[in-house]
Image 1 (tube, helix red, strand yellow):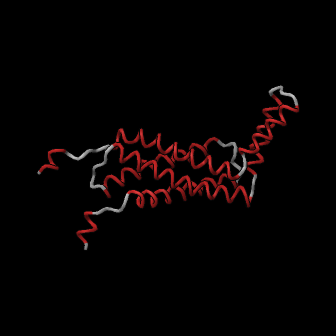
Image 2 (tube, helix red, strand yellow):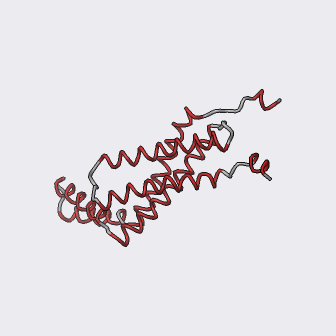
Image 3 (cartoon, one colour):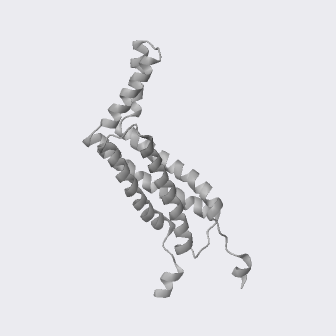
Length: 180
């Protein structure tokens, strides 16, 4: 039984789900701190979130390659794995964001709409045009829309990160070693 487990690593999906959950929880902590401390306009918090996401995906791919695949991974396997990690992390953080913005505090939404309103009024548009644009913006700043866009954004960012990371992390098995 022990030999069977050594030769059959956990599935890619299960491994990515586990690692995505860890990454999603780390990003959720950063997001909740942003909401609670109202750091909406702080660019450093965005940079920190992106850095954690990049480091988490690179670390996840490297760990998957070294621990679960025996040190070898193809370009496609790594890109797929990293994208799955980002998808699962995005689902977790988007779920928490939806709950927080929809039921606890919508301060981020109010801040965003207020900043957009200021920008529209200062751009010289008439009051009617400004109100029309603000009403269409409100559709995209609902908790559901923010959560859905968050999932797509995280997944896309994870895909790009994985594509770049795999240029450095790819390690194909030696073709001669397989024939022995």
